[in-house]
Image (cartoon, rainbow, N blue to C red; front, side, top):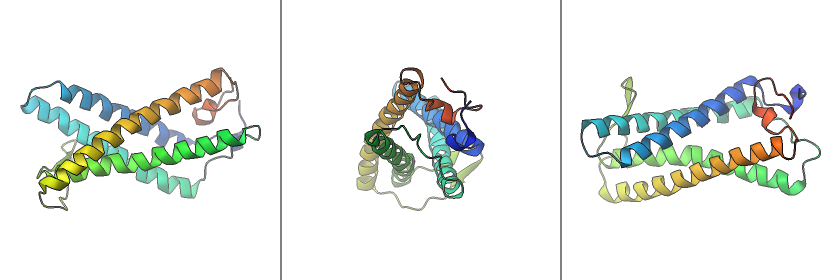
Length: 182
């Protein structure tokens, strides 16, 4: 078992895995929507996609606050400097995309004159009037940033698995409950 000072704390682990589930859910839902004809079923699935996006944004905010309260553990001393830089850059990019993708999606909906309803529980207040030019720009931004987000999240998972099972340095264990080393 890894020492506690080398592992992320339980709230950070919970926020991390909830974010992974929400991002995966939003991705799967948009893939489903792309193959559906217009109609109430498609609108329902798109509403779920938007709801998962709002969850990603809320989790980003919670993670950002928690990171200030409880900074992440230091990298293991044996980490090569280039790996530490790559890890920091990758995490920064993921955090930026956790913010940018949902915000672009919300602005896209508002500028298209569509509300952002969250699981039928509440609707985000619309802060912008319809604007077709802004909608087009946000649609492009949302799609490109979303694809980049999914790619980087996948790369993040692959790198963690390689560290855990090939390099056997316990990197994945830092974010797993119990923190068992490889």
